[in-house]
Length: 166
Length: 166
Image 1: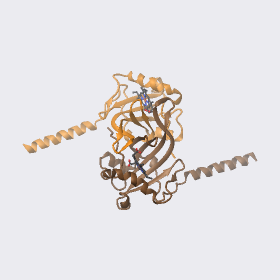
Image 2: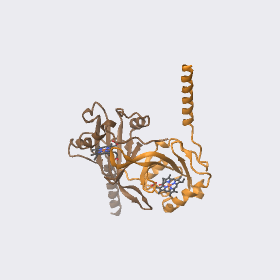
Image 3: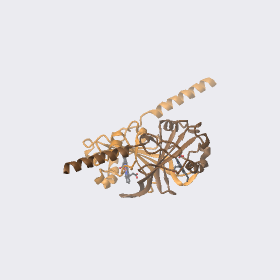
Image 4: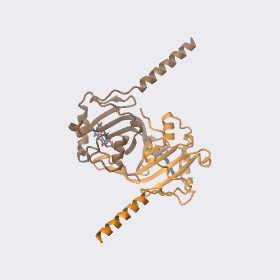
């Protein structure tokens, strides 16, 4: 009996591991979560006092190569910019350092000047929290992204200036 | 004459490009700047109010794999942790965002529990600015690093707690 319970528990754990590994649902505009974004390289970093969160801006190879070559006006088609955000937290052993707490969201801008011509050449998408729930009730969520990013239209709708690196 | 001047200028530019591509000098303790660190993945991020700078903490594959597996007490031999720092700057189009300005330094901790037994199992090194000038007049600079990092001895002398990722 004890053995059977252990086996059942094992099976349940295995099943939940499989569920956890499943791909998150696509955004309401059909954009799929980019694969392997957790392996992308750094393009920028920011601390948003208005959102009390720390952000890392990352990119796929096309985007990182463009950033390092200074070839970002416009960013080439195929570039994907990602932003990962965490809630502010005080470092437990170094109070003047703000460090990442809870994971907030991962969001992306995918450059395809033909496909996304109506939205500045970029496809927008966001997934919330550790469970990666797609953001937005329907396609119109993109208007919210655009309303803000349009303020930097003269910089190809991108806020981030790639970091200087030696 | 004009042609010769142009050629000479071209040659000078080419020569300085070669110089710029040369490897920076090693740190006073003999540690060489890790190759390809600019391609490493993200382990953390921080905003140091005491130093008015933004930091990204990155790692080589051994370190990133250990971080993602929760295998950091201690970090395995071969792990290299890097930290890149930039001076705070206000985003020109989004004032409540602090973003990277001037590049400050790149610094590293290399885990080799035998080789660096006297310094908590870590070899420390730092290179300053875009010119990547090694930090420290002599080997004793390491004492400065240790004096601070010893405060987190119970965390294998590492301040950073790897960020949560979905």
